[in-house]
Image (cartoon, rainbow, N blue to C red; front, side, top):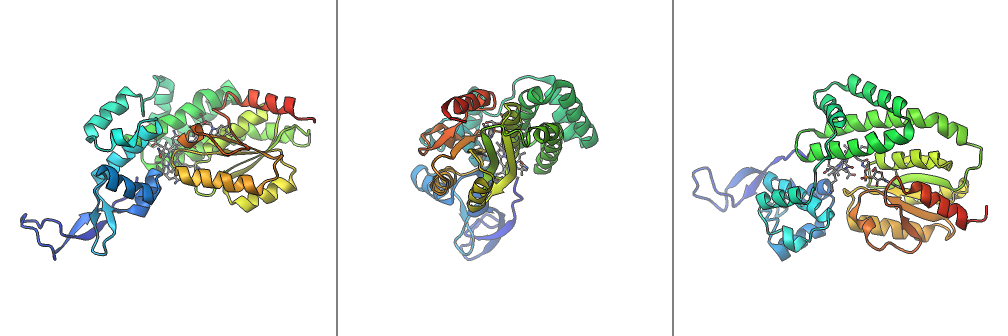
Length: 327
Ligand code: B12
C-alpha cells in the first residue's frame, strides 16, 4: 500500500471551518501517477472516470495537480477489482463503498475457498514466523511433489495473500517475503528437473518471462514448472525482460514459443500495446502464449497470440502444438 504524503492543498476548509481560498492547509493525498501505478490503471482512465462518472473527486495541489485522499484510493482499489471481475464502470463508480463491498461479497470477489492449511500458512506469514513459513512450504512441496504443490498450494496461496493484502491484513513487505519463499521452494524442486531436461531436445522450446512493468513473477514460474513436467525445454528469464532482449534470446536459443504472464496490476493498454509490438518483432513461426489473471486476456487478442486459460490446460496446449508441428 502506498504511504500517503501530506501535501499543502489550497481551498480546503481551515481548522475553524471558515475556509480561505488563499490559505495553505496540509491535507494527505496521493498523486495521479502513483495511484495509477498502484491500482493498475492509466492516468487517462482516472481522468475519464472523473469527467464521465463524477468519481474520483481529487483535491488539487497548489500547482493544480490531482491529489487523491485515502478513502478514494480504497474505493478505487475495490472498483478495479470489481471491473476485473466483469462489472461495468457505469454500474460501480457512482456507488458508495458500502454498496461496492456488498457487491464484492455477492460476486465472490476477494473471497477465499475454505482451506485451514492455507489459512495456517498465511497466519505464519502474518505473525512474522518466516523460518516456519519457509519450512512448511518446503515440507509440503517435497511431500506432495511439484505438480500438486503448484496447483494446491502455490496458486491458491498467492490469491489468498493478495486478498489479505487488499483487506489490509497483510502488508506489502509480507507479499515480498511470501514471493521470496515461494520462489525458493519452486526453484528447489524445479532445478533437478530442468537440469535433466536440458539437452534432451524437448519441444516446444519455451522462453518464459514478463514484459517490462509486470513485476509479478510467480505466475510465470508456476507455468515453467508445469511446462517442464510436460517435458518442454524451458528458458526462464525472470520477470521484466525488454522486448529487444526477448527477440535476441529467441533467435540465439531457437525458441518455439514465448510464454508471458500478466497480472491484473498491469494496465490493459500496456498489455495490448506490448503484445502487439512483440508480435511485430518476432518471426511469425514463433508463437506467443499468454496466461495470468489479467482481464485483458479474456478479450480478443492479436493474431498470433494465444491465451492459455490457467495451469491445468498446459498439457493439452503442449499436446496440440506437438500434433500441429512436424518435429
Ligand atoms: C506477490 C505479489 C506481489 C509482489 C510480487 C513479487 C514477485 N517477485 O512476483 C509485489 C510485492 C512486488 C507486488 C507488487 C504489487 N502488487 Co501484487 N500481488 C502479489 C500476489 C500476492 C501474487 C502475485 C503473482 O505472482 N500472481 C500471479 C499468479 C500467481 O496469479 P495469476 O495471475 O492469477 O495466474 C494464475 C494462472 O493464470 C497461471 N498463470 C500465470 N501466468 C501464466 C502464464 C502462462 C503462459 C500460463 C500458461 C499460465 C499462467 O498461474 C497462476 C496460478 O493460478 C498477487 C495476488 C494474486 N491473486 O495474484 C498480488 C496482486 C497481483 N498485486 C496487486 C497489486 C495492486 C500490486 C501493486 C500494484 C500494489 C502492491 N501490492 O504493492 C504492486 C505493484 C506491482 C506492479 N506495478 O507491477 C493486485 C492487483 C489487483 C488489480 N486488480 O490491479 C493483486 C491481485 C493483489 C490484490 N488482491 O489486490 N505484488
